[in-house]
Length: 313
Length: 286
Image (tube, rainbow over all chains, first blue to last red; front, side):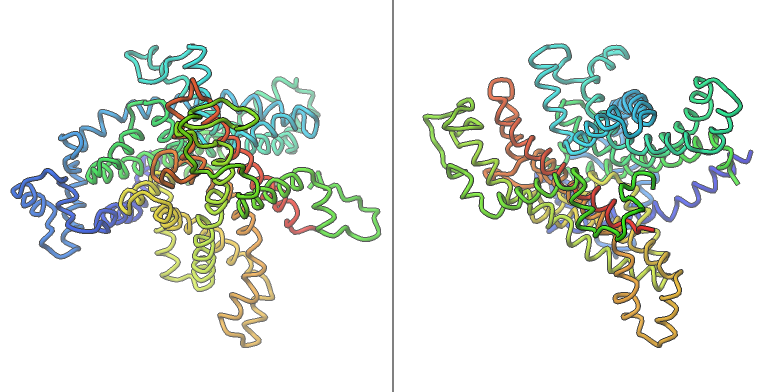
């Protein structure tokens, strides 16, 4: 019950933010030089098409009426028609969404598998060579652009060694896992570089905490201390950090999808940009914003369910 | 901090410069960035060929003494193109961040000092902008303005100032808790004097440290946009563009894409090493 109330409160707080998000997306297309109707309909539109768009968007009305129409249309799921795909923007987005969602979750999973053990090894060997080596490697990783990591992996593991396919999404769950391994690994390398440093300091902080010293003094076995206390607390900070980095993660996904020709939202965004498909650009920008705030909300809930100090007040 | 190397028995505290010289990471960063700046200022001195000189008899030649990084599809010398790209890529580190820094510092200082309705609106704007993945918003703006370097700088500034302003605001508010801020008020100083002469110099250190990290990010972002075709445009020599040009020949002429990438990694590493070093050095010491 309290959780439900909290979710409702959070959602209410999101309303003004989303109004502004809508204003930003609305303004994007207004800054286009020339007639927005022409931009939205595309070059091959007939006069009747143009008139229909002007009417639907209220382009002959004052700006605030136009915004109101844009807002009400969007809330009803009407994001306009894609010039490129010649179908409803919402349909196109919903069709591509699962691929990007799959890739993102896959990448998060892999980055935890990479950064987690590495951070543990670094934290337990603080100041000694394993710590230095791990931190240096990940520091270099942080300076690598995602598209470059992707291109190098693509060249050596897919094109040369032929261990993985060079692109695509595949059919069925196992095939998805196989096809998306390299893209997910690319995003994961970059994401784990972001989380490693924080995870390492979080683990060190817990290791130095009084309750861990107390557990040691009690004579609890090391395995239990690490598993019960350290792991649990490290997990909280990892989830929080991953949640807050979701924007970075999505940016990485966008670039990676382009490198590996994964038919997701990111690649669609670039196709839309080069085709000057403004309704699709608007729809995708909104989708990304919705996804990010959804993850922010979930992070909050997860965090409060793991950490009693954060229990929903 | 447990990792302070300064021994407490030393009669005088070492100066910041002495501390800096004792940090290999920071020194390495300075050497990398210093050398990169040199390459950016005078690429002609270091590049053996004109970066746009087309040689149809030397197409996609592998690395050799004559062409250390090989040649591209038009027979241009890759080494010279990577060197000449230093100019535009180093520019990115400055031009993609400095306007965001200035706007962010001013806006952040003002809303932090005056609070009130402007601060509330500012808070909503921050919430809205961080709801978009950074890259998505930047490329959406580039899509509207049109691809190109200048538009890329405008887009990054439009989105990036928020991060500086948010940091600046928090620092100003923290500084206002100190007595010296009230003292200025009692002395009858103008708001402008208190904000810009008293609070700002004390509050700016974390912002400047963030600026260093942001420069590294700017090079990564700028080259990513160049790779995607939204930043610098061919035939301009820019690392992202060079990697994209080599992409189609990556199995046969791998050097075309590999070398500019190494330049990106080195420069990015240089900036982040300096950023880390500065964070250590400028942190208030007890």
